[in-house]
Length: 123
Image (cartoon, rainbow, N blue to C red; front, side, top):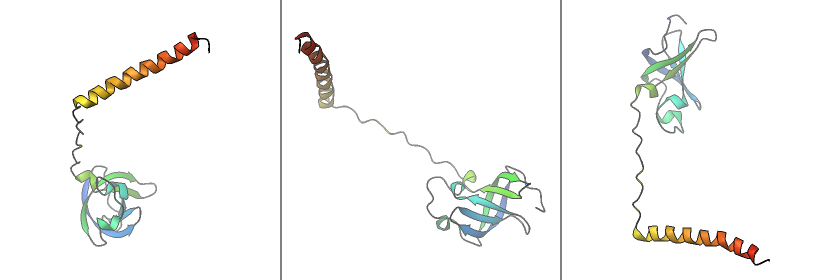
């Protein structure tokens, strides 16, 4: 590693290779990092090459620098706005839904009592 890269730094790099697990990105002539498939974008990524191509110049954020092994973890996802999680609305209960719930509760208590009645009758 010629230049010292810092975690959190945003730099421009060039995609040099695509693998099933991610994309290799050259940060300078002597330094290369990896954008893991999970760090490409939000959501599921089936194929890295659907998002990146060899030769692409891209902005990446440095997530981790392992100087001992000379590995740099990169992310393009960290530079994107996270999608808003939509809260699922509960459908309103109709009168029929409420009646069915009450009936189910009524049958439940009958079922519980039935066992007591059977035991009391001596069977």
